[in-house]
Length: 307
Image (cartoon, rainbow, N blue to C red; front, side, top):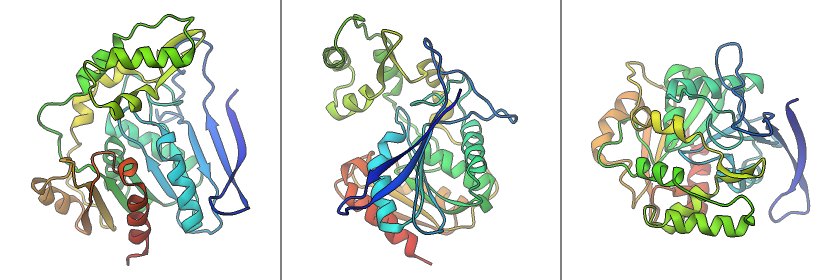
């Protein structure tokens, strides 16, 4: 039976409470989440929906590779308070609490998001996607422009990621982790970090990857579908070809210390997104929303007010 629950969270700086809804597809006692599909082949995603107080177009967040909907939870709460809008976060297929599938293309992930928006009766939305989630958001905007009122792509552009990628080595290192089942969670996490350290030398990246270490049926495992992610890394690093354009407002928000939105990408951004703005946040790397959270929120709020 699918699990759906409603809860309350206190708004920052207020004595009031706001309501959120959480949906997590039921999982089996052992093994990865079942491949739950709708009639058109889209996956049924796990999501959190934070209720707003105004009928304005909702904000929809899409996380990046190895991430989850929890990456944007605190930001979602602040944006509900600041804008009054509903905010939706979700786990992509093969991530978080969403089901696993051997297929992981941007077309497939786009279909998943569109299915959820239809399920929640969102006729339009403001899409905010980071990295892989940004490419998924771009795919949706180019496929279904009427579904996207505004688009925000966080530290990603619609071009293939070239050069040496550390993701294959990250996946290999994660697959080689060995933990005894009887270990307490804190010790298991510490030992896993020690085993990752020779390959994943950035402590912040190690902590980010370790958010995916869980214990299921008495065994430590990764909640990510590493096999599917590894197989589809070329698809994830690339971007589908489009001849159509997205006519709506778009913001490409990069980290000034990151190379994921370079000047070489500007022409392709402008071709596909003719109304695009390109901005950078100082002292931020690829994880802009984590490095400079307040500036990230302020940039979103300013973009919502532009005509």
